[in-house]
Image (cartoon, rainbow, N blue to C red; front, side, top):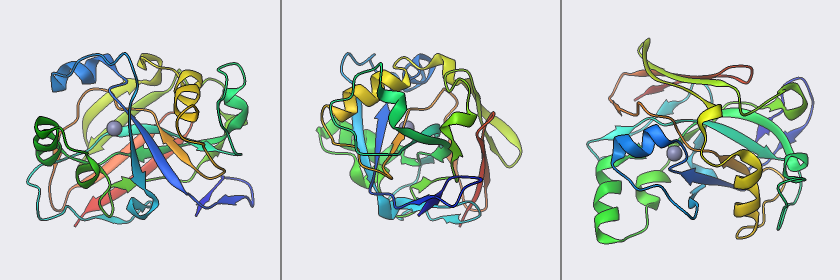
Length: 216
Ligand code: ZN
């Protein structure tokens, strides 16, 4: 369950739909191509952990990367949204970390295989509580940062998204019906790097909140 800050409303999360390759500087650092169609994948609800919880890196990986992302909480059922109405379906905004087993993902990519074991493992989706959408004046103008043990690793702005939130929700809802309590992750800026046992991860989005987890 996730909570909307300052209200009694809570949501049961069904699925987390994630957009890859949505910041040009991050596409460049991984040597990927700019996608004409959205790169989408889903993290299961079982991968979610909350503030203060511990990340457990699976034993089949030697390289787990942090990706700080703006999380969008869907407030009601949404299918085939238009861009002009899409933001009306957003209940709130939060902070997420899309943990990614980069070595495993690179291997799967090379073989043309699906990414779930690199992206959807238990604890792969640390997620904060949400701030009501009405309290975020412009979700496309927020500083977004990730610190590991106090050191600044990612420092971007949601202004740099290639696809903005209305377009993301239009494209996703044309494929997957979004239901109340679903969450959409909107991609990560540059600066992703490996984490290790004992690390303390602090993800922050200006005007939205912060999320701290540690690595077991
Ligand atoms: Zn991501």
